[in-house]
Length: 639
Image (tube, rainbow, N blue to C red; front, side):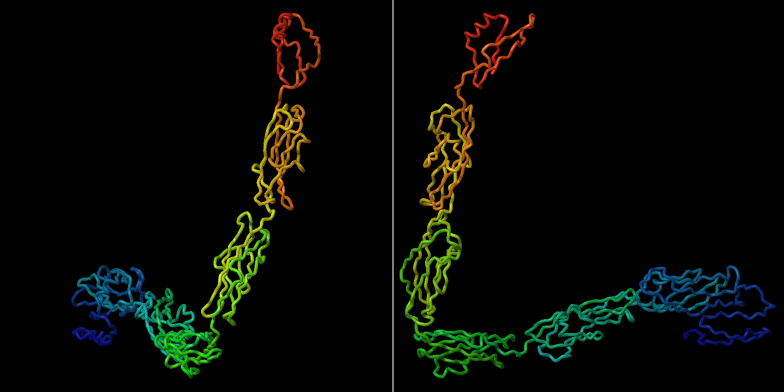
């Protein structure tokens, strides 16, 4: 250490023994420590070390200068190094106490601590290399003798870097504009990112993320961050680019860190596109009687450039020798300004220019006959019939009109004024066809307004009306008002007695909708019943006997008079009600009954039954006579 206030500024010293000592010797010391001098005493004369002014002993560090390295961000208590000094004294005088103090920056005192007994030095708080990378201390060892003696050493602690900082761009978003058609390799702009770390942890490389099609146009230098063109820049293809640039350091502990920035590049227009006409050849049909200053055509050209480079002006280059035509420079509208010759064709060349570049097209103007006649139908009203069962696509009628003009003026187009979904008309022929199935029961007639329109300028037209009558066909069977009928009648009614009435309807019209009733093909109860064909009344044809047939299940039909006829069956249930038309009959005329004497009262001695299902009543006189003649018996009647 070269300190101006310190007498010891050399590495080697020659120290003489104190005067008067017979054993004068010369000693050499090499140290960077502060030195304490002790008189030399031969071994034969050596005595215990008693701290006195005359006796000075050295307390040297081993070594005298320490170097240590500690990673930043390590937790408090991380070991740094251990300093060691030796004291040849014994006992309390030879025990050392260590301390340390920062030499250049007092902030270092808060970051490190030394064990006063062992000399072990450790961190007192996490270190940050970016705040301070080197810490220098004076380490002192003091013994416990009297007087106290000390030794000092230097400690230099270097804080090593860890990758704890992301790269940081100078700005989060960069904006630049370039003109299109730049040469390849043109430097657009430079992005820069810095990293607070050191070494590889601060070595930043750049790349483009998610560039898509932009990667064909731009590239970035991985080390300098310069963005250059690598392909053609065409505003008409892409007028703005948005690039995402990533800056990544090369740290390995704990790993690389990165950051991103957005680069927006606007492409400025060059006048590198000529106007383009929508068609190479335009054709206009102009009637001979066209009045001057009438627009006959509008041409259109577009320019893919932008702004003033895309403004298009129109002009007639050739073919307008007599000045018949005028074109509006801004709109491209072509006007006739003088009368034209009939049956003549004019050929014009027109140009569209943006001031630097231009395109040309041809315009053919055909002068045609004037549209002086309108189409005419032969009649103002037509009526036609069609059966309702005709298939879809059936031609109902062909309506035609005539026009005395020629060419396009005489070409007629037919159309229906109102949209009726059941029918359509062919625009060229006037044929009316069915589009849907027809149903007489839903609608019996349709009225169509049909217009014939020529293709002249201006168009002329005529209108007629077509009435379509739908004819009925027998497409509906009769329908009964009920699914089945029930009736009842007493068995003793006379023949031709009305039992019930059935009824059916038919949605068809005329004979197709007329219904009559019959048991033919059905069940008339083996001839016991008849049905009136017009009214549907079911009557008895014979006398009924409930005891023989208590219930009839009949089947009748409702039949229309269409060709072929349609019929519908129905079930009829007739219940025959009982009347007392049969007298009771005993199974025997005489009964012999034997009864034991002393039989209890109420004992049933016999059961007498009858034939037939009619009610049995005992006349009162007979019952009384039975009780008088045979007082020991009682007759009970049961049904």
